[in-house]
Image (cartoon, rainbow, N blue to C red; front, side):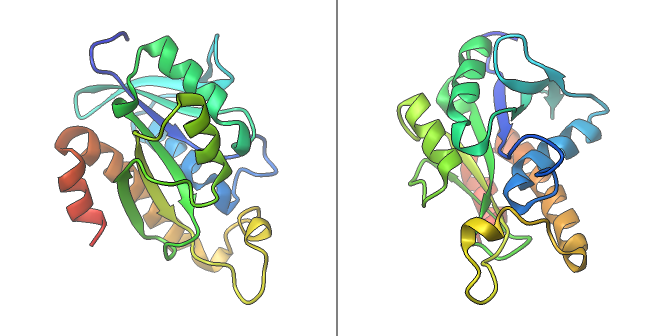
Length: 192
C-alpha cells in the first residue's frame, strides 16, 4: 500500500490480556471484529509499535491497527504507521471509548477537542493537529461517585454483553460507511 488513498483505521486500547475486555479497549475490540469479519489476522508491524492487518473494506485499501503501547502513548505508533503507509490525516479514522455518550451509541466527527482523553491527546500531539476522523464509541458514565478513570479500566458487565456486541457491529459498519460514503452521510446515520 502506498500513497494511493489507503485508509488507516486505529482502535485505541491498552495492551495485554488484563485490559482486553475493558471499556477503555472498545476501539481495539472493534478492530478485532473488523479483522475477524474480513477473515484476516493482525501481525506485528516491523517499524511501528502496533499490530496491523492490510485488507480491503468495500473495495478501499485499509490498514487496521491496534497500537501495542498504552493508551496515553498512542501517538507514536499512529504517527509511525501514517508515515510508513503514506496516509494523510484526512484518511485516518480513530475508534475510541467515549464516556459522554450512552452505552452502545456512536457519534462520528472530524477533528475536535480531546475531552480529557489521553489517547486522543497523544495522537493530536504526534500528528500536530486534530483533523482526522473519530468514531466515538459510547461506554456511558460511571454509576454513582465512581471515578471515571477507574470506570474505564473495568470490564463491561455481563448484563451489557448484548449492547457491547451491538456497539462492535455498529463500529464496524460506521468505518465502512465513513470510507465509502463520507462524513455527512455517516453522521446522518449515527449522530441523530
